[in-house]
Length: 144
Image 1 (cartoon, one colour):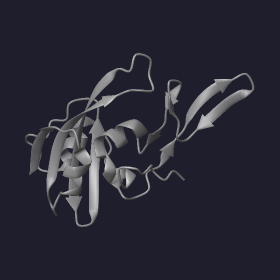
Image 2 (cartoon, rainbow, N blue to C red; image 1 turned 45 degrees about the horizontal axis):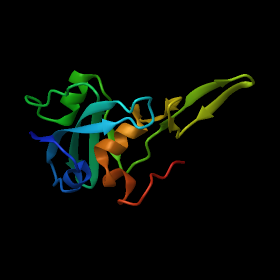
Image 3 (cartoon, rainbow, N blue to C red; image 1 turned 30 degrees about the vertical axis):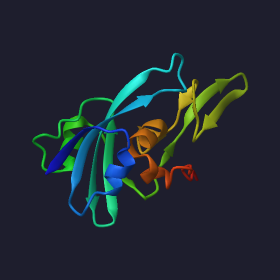
Image 4 (tube, helix red, strand yellow; image 1 turned 45 degrees about the vertical axis):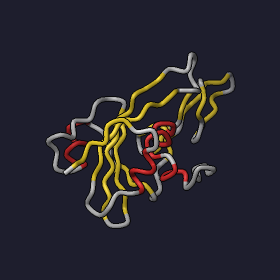
């Protein structure tokens, strides 16, 4: 069963405290500092602990976890792809057109584009996972 935690300010603390078999559904506010006017996006996420693994989904659309028995059911209903924290997430490129061709970014976060990992914008992953993804309050993700 998936527990609803409502809106969170520190999702990393909740995700890190999940016990075996527990799943949590929550929302988090993300300020898009890299866009003109700094718009705010409400994100929803579901995370589930399976042994030492934490599986999650993040979306800017509502996730209906109320009747779902597990994360995969919510993912299928919502059309999002689950990812595993602590495992490599495939970085996806952004192409920035230039007169000579294009710049190709794997980890860009700025007005011209935001790269994704595992189908989720990097900024959303950071907003929805906090210290769990970053490894600590002063850390940055390791991008290979």
